[in-house]
Image 1 (cartoon, one colour):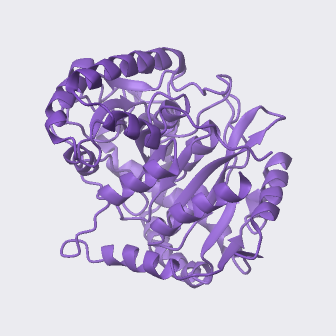
Image 2: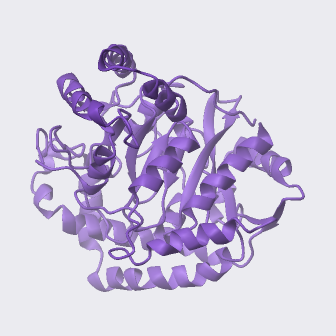
Length: 444
């Protein structure tokens, strides 16, 4: 069924308004003491925190208060534990790196801090942002017997339970969209290259993408607008984001492409996913939106295999030193690295060459639409111990397109949420926020 999440006090917009209303520091301090108590209570139940320091939070608040006009004044941000942070440890979900302190902030963290944001906590991540999360960490707030998704799970859970309004995440395959879908929050993966990755764990050069998980689209839009690299003298392509949005704003009618059974894995999607997706399409089709099934894209079914070659080979390169300490590494991580070692260098180079070729092949197709629509995941969150089924998430990551996952579905059968995935042509990030808000209004 179609079901929108209810508004709450920790939604980005609501919390921002509340914080802005405080007239003196004592009011802010009193509020934050209560906020921290609630956060710790949520964390004791759902286990989504890797590192938290109350004194550090108040130290930041006292420094920020003199600049109340800053863009993110006193707003708390969760930081996935793959981003360097100056004060809090950066463990990357690994026993090998436990207690490591980078001594600096990742570029995206600096962008938030410079605008008044608070580095509130480091959220739990899968080991080296791959697959393995220790048992008992990041429990799904809807049902602890079901998983929370892949590596940005701690960020998703922190937002889903109401502990934080927004958290940083990363996606190399589906690590933002899947946790967003399984936990019932908004997830945004920008166009590849939109956000500087300096100071962020590297796993695959042509795939790693920084994004956000939030309680509302407002928070996603504001955070992305403030933090993406937009100085034309340093980032030549940044003008494309503004030009794309300017062109989008002139459209009187939208053309939206549907992606379902063109993806071979769609046959294995649960029936309620297919039924609810079809029902939503009927709701949004009107005089302003023309829906059309995308044709001639069977080649997308080659992408999972190419992604695996690039990803596993890259892991075997970047984690050579860690691979020596397999006793402190999960079985799945060591297996993926070992698999990478077995991939022939020529096959890896071939996959790397084909990646831009496939982008060039899909670009004219997606540019004939304003957006694409497809379910975020093949099912609701699987039970603990079960694997996620293949979906289209890594296809859009591979192609570098921006994606927004909306928490608009609820399975009455499973009593769990799942998401709707909106895809735009590269640089269409801002238009995604507009369309996401329009979809929410149409189905409300």
